[in-house]
Image (cartoon, rainbow, N blue to C red; front, side):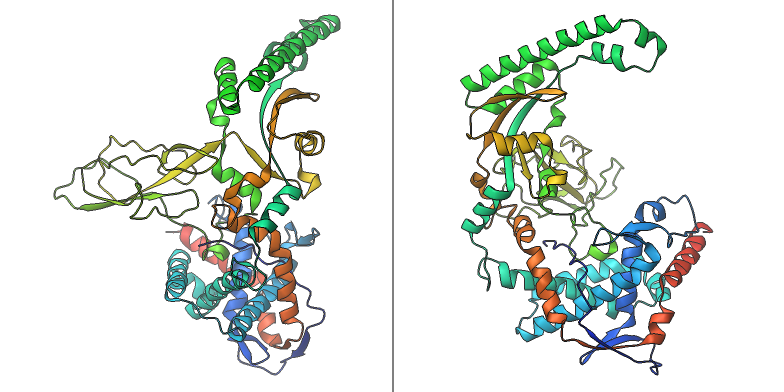
Length: 498
């Protein structure tokens, strides 16, 4: 399931709000036109964002009492605000987005397919299980509210592709994507050679008295010049090799081998994907459970099994999609205590297959010589020497990338460049040749969302501009960030006592 960005804060200045001061039904937070909104929907948005903003603290297990509502965070406009002030606005705006998605989906006559409904149901059940129904109930969140949330998230996704997908009303074509890549991306491979050696660096920067006094300023200058000359010589050597060899990857490998640079420095496909879409992708918060891949690697053991049982071994690509029955990496069914058969290396354009791992962080390589007794999931990792970087946000673009984009005029021609710290041997490539960003490519969904998410947000704004909202003021006063944190503290304290 693809993962859309969270839709940002929308203007609500033009929305007509009418108070429901006399309302006593606390299960309803508001009515939008003729749509009654469960209070649990609003609470769930507050809770999920609270947990996301405090995840590192609340998941550490180092405390059972949390007081984070005065914590300063950055809102969608880049302003510093207190978490306690931010959460109600966040939940209110996203609740309206939920209504807008539901109403627009219905207006267009769209329906969830059986597969979509199953996906929503799975997400709901996983959420209820992970958060526990007891905890959600204490927070005032019912399964119906959770279902509304995940249904809206799926509707948002389908609406996006209804407008911008291959056959959408405002379809983005391959030519549009190529033009976008040409104007907003830089693609290159590089060898970076430090202009100082370990010895001169230690002598000139070490904090120990002995190291800082072993060389006079004149000696340090002489050593630095020598290190710079050696680095320049290396750069000239590999520039010459690059000009003589069409395979720059081979030259990079030779440099790494001869300088003993760790081969793990190669960029993974997952790292590159994170430069295309916000992470959104890295998001593993409760609010993103509908779209995040949550498959965990089963831990294999060597425990003696009395009676052999069927064990499934699943293989996943770096997008979290399981390889199908028609691929060499199809699922395997073996008897417990047997070994899985290592499949053929999967192929991914512009990448080199690395290995099979037991986790999505790619830290534990799977050993195909070990016996398997439990359900096992394996994840393919790919590497590349290539950098494909967005240059839209100039503040985050490195000086090197700016130089390559603006000063290197020819593709596929090695050049040498230096800055204050390194010499570089660089080959610039045409970003429009990256077919994996085009329709049906692995990076198509990410680049499409990057291209159109701001326009999509404005569409949501337009769908909401005529909303007539009746707010249940008593419910808003009852369901507050402090109440969420109070219940969270009670729950955490209870868990620590067990």
